[in-house]
Amino acid sequence: MLTHILLLNPVYVTLFWIIVLNLYPRKGNEPKRFLGKFMIVAFVVYISHLFFFLEINNLYIWVDSFYNFASLAVFPLYYIYVLLLVRDRRFLWRLHGRYLIAPAVIFVLIAVGYINMNDETQINYVKLVQHGIASPGKGIRYMQVISFLAKIVFVVQVIVYLRLAYKLISRHNAEIAEYYSEPESMNLRWVQTFSLSFFLVSAASAVVAMIGRENFQGNDLYLVAPSVVFSLLLFTIGLLGNMQKAVHIIVPEACGGQVMDETIPAKLKEDLVELFEKGKIFLDKDLKIWDVSGQLGTNRTYVSRIINKEFGQNFSTFVNGYRVAHAKTLISTKKNYSVEEIADLSGFGSVNSLYRAFLAAGVSLKEYRSENRRNGGS
Image (cartoon, rainbow, N blue to C red):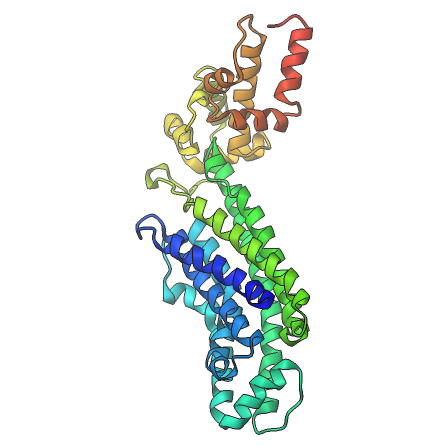
């Protein structure tokens, strides 16, 4: 009974998220719906584990090929999910299908192996060999080689796709800081948590893959750790993904992205500073770099280059520097503004953004207000 419960835990978790995520309407929810497909693949993996450990051999013969495909497809699908979050509008076979080539090849090789074995050898392979007991038979050695190859591919994919996903997310977070003054709503910091969760699943899965599932058989306690870890982390992945929408960066064509001349107009830096110091454009909570370039009548890339090279900052940091300075001015007045009022009057989109901007400037908001009071301020 305990074995059944432990094996069914991740099955129930994935089934729950399959239902929740696939109920979203298509338009505007492509990443969530794709994560639902990811959960279907994870469901195949864990229902296969159920058949394997309960030794439902006649059925497992038919699902083994699908199990290997699903287990190898998990990490490419995760990377595709991240692509849908930050870059691609929808899943396209011609664009994303290449990431599933390795799982598809292993699927075919294993299916061919089963086809070339007679009924008795198939049963012996599933009942004995896959449980760590040697057995002769035509095609057994072939299947062992392919099974070992699948484990190598699995581990390689864990490393490759998690690295690709990490680089993609890091690049996205850097880009939005160059375009948006208030990038928090588009920032994928939570995906770092998501990736950590997924890395833990990956590490646990890789260990199980290299050790071999047969070594977890015979004692229910051996299944406790994998069951609890996989169930909790799969639930976390589903929960985080369920809250996240796509955050594609959309740059208006009119703002221009190409610079025809490497030389930046000399007066442009002065105009930029004047726009912020006198025009106080930073008070616009939804300020974007193309809003600035539009008011300056210049190219977005010129503005970005000035901020990067002349001030050594990205756009978000540059804008928030003025907002922090304005907030300090408000704090220094005799009127006792609330934190919410300071954030609103300084151009910050939220109190959390205000706190983070002060910390980035080298002092916490609380410390600055306390110091200001001690020095005779409000």
